[in-house]
Amino acid sequence: MKPAAFSYHRPASLEEALVLLARTGNAKVIAGGQSLGPMMNMRLAAPAALVDLNDLTEMSYVRDAGDMLEVGALTRHHQVEESELIRSSCPLLAQAARTIGHYAIRQRGTLGGSLAHADPSAQLALVAVTLDAQINIVSVRGQRTVRASDFFLAVMATALEPDEVIRSVCFPKATSQEGTEYLPFNRRHGDFAIVAVATTVTLHEGRVASLRLGLSGISPVPVAYGALASQFAGRIPDAAWIAELARAARDAVAPEDDARIPAVYRKELTETLVQRAMARALERAQG
Figure (tube, rainbow, N blue to C red):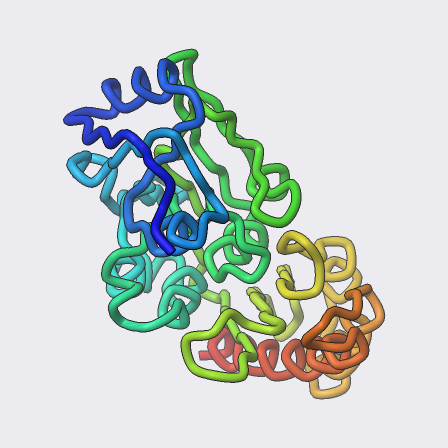
């Protein structure tokens, strides 16, 4: 099957792109096209116009922004994976990027495209929610910043208005005593995860100073379990602590049965993955 007819625009600047989006009804932004392209071919998406951002090289960057790391929306997945600044300052993001699809997909797909597409099992969306990232959005009407937890509304639905574009995303930097782990479970390499865990843990004098825990694959949007994580701070992170946290995570999730995976299987996966991910994060935090 081929896509429905559409007009094609390749703006030379972000300003031109925003004007096109404001003036063109039913337009879609395209950068990597790793999700939109197949959807158009299957006619699951039929935009009247495509606005191609690939000439906007100024939107591809990784920048130190004080206690945050700012990553441009057109930064490719392989650049996120390979950036030394990201690896040192936000290792969870690099760990997640390594698991995206296959090499060819990581060469084309972009950070902004992944977030805007909002697949509930997408790797970078889970990292953004877990780390409470700030998503910077722009249109001809101005700029605004949305917390990742408020950005994802439902399956493939976000807070983006039709005339808006993600400009960049700001992630908090990791501390020197912080360990991280992104751990997905999928049937085949390159598939979206059935369940994925993202976690960070910071230690101080042998106790858990802070903890983040996020899960995807168990609800329509990725979820950060902040209240649950805070209950486990201040304690010594031994094997019993890890097991208790994993059981609490299993009890906290409420997945639904679907045609592929029963809910009970996702709950069991949650416990197993949280236990493994936290053990690895602690190893990194302990040096």
